[in-house]
Length: 97
Image (tube, rainbow, N blue to C red; front, side, top):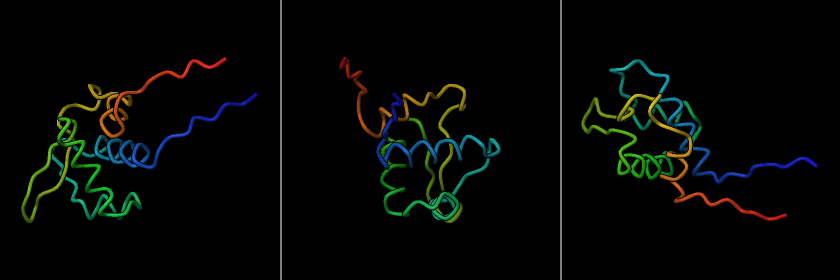
């Protein structure tokens, strides 16, 4: 029997944004518009997700004409679980046999 892990769109978009930011050069800042276009994520929805990730200390944001987003710490220090729990809350194991 094959099991499929289903994740929410928020988790999907949050992970995709974080993976994209992790692939950028260290000093590079990605604008909301660039992220939205590159990742094919609606701008307003992505802005809400990035705001949450910023509030949880995973992403750093800067304002202004050259503002945007970058990881708040090295990618190697950020787990998928941390991103998932930032956007959706604590993960609980469903023990159902």
